[in-house]
Amino acid sequence: MNGAPGILPCQSIEALIADGAIGAEGGVEPGQVQPASLDLRLGNRAWRVRASFLPKVGGTVAARIRDVAMHELDLTRGAVLERGCVYIAELRERLALPSGVSARANPKSSTGRLDVFVRLLTDGQPVFDDVAAGYAGPMFLEIAPQTFSILARAGAELNQLRLKRGAPGALCAEAIGVDLGDGLAGFRARRHAGVIDLDLEAGHDPRDFWEPVEARRGELLLDPGEFYILASKQPIEIPVFQAAEMIPIDPAVGEFRVHYAGFFDPGFGTAEAGGEGSRAVLEVRSHETPFLLEDGQSVAKLVFEALAERPTRLYGASGSHYQRQGLRLSKHFKAW
Image 1: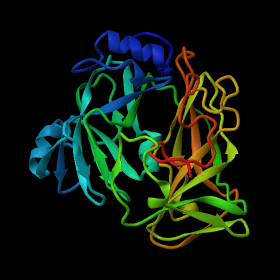
Image 2: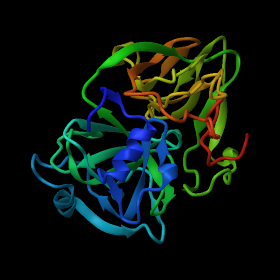
Image 3: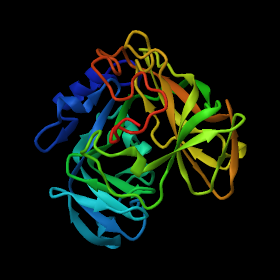
Image 4: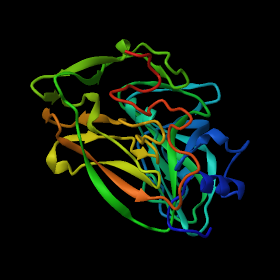
């Protein structure tokens, strides 16, 4: 696959699908293709496993599942994936990438906002989420719900794939601060809440799953082990010729983790796509000790990369749950 180096936009992803480099039984649905990423779907089977793992070098994920599986789940009928447990699910999509094209996976925004930890596995690859250039084979997804148990079915989209030609590298990075002005600062997940149906949009009462938290004097104390939804201090804008990924900031600045779901597509937050003023929603978990966050404190980093060419459509241009967002829960909840 020839062309300029960079992250592949939607029209290039569609060309890969047409050429058979990305395929699925029954075909890939047009709605899976985003401006600079591809949504991946759960397959028919998942396995409860004893522990997370990586395949052996040269080995397959399927062979490793046989070593650690406890029982198999039928996702065509729907299955509850319980918090605190680890599962491996097959994905519908398969890859046969050209030699110069690699990929990287990340949780979808709605997945991260539910505190569901997901990571991509591919055969013979001793790393999570990164897919080597020229990879040909199946894909699997590790799913570890941290706070809420979830009801998942075949076809659910929990993660997404970003494809890249060559190795152009990052253009720049931007520190992201947290908004802790006085008043409502965010939401803290309730312990021992009910099951969240991933197919049910705007169908859950947020008060059953979340409690609001307020900042005092521009500060918020994070309790160890608790999960919070907060928002960025500054608006985020992803230029139309770029894409970005939110990554955790250096752990030396604080004992917390921010943003499990990190892909931002071109057009997010831009006036051209109707998203001027959009904020990043931050998924925050404190680790071993209480940690006091301050208004404007840098909590994550946004890394920008160039697209191989301008996408033919932009994020949110035809409607999105999260364009022009401020502080917002996932699409599964009714308005607060």
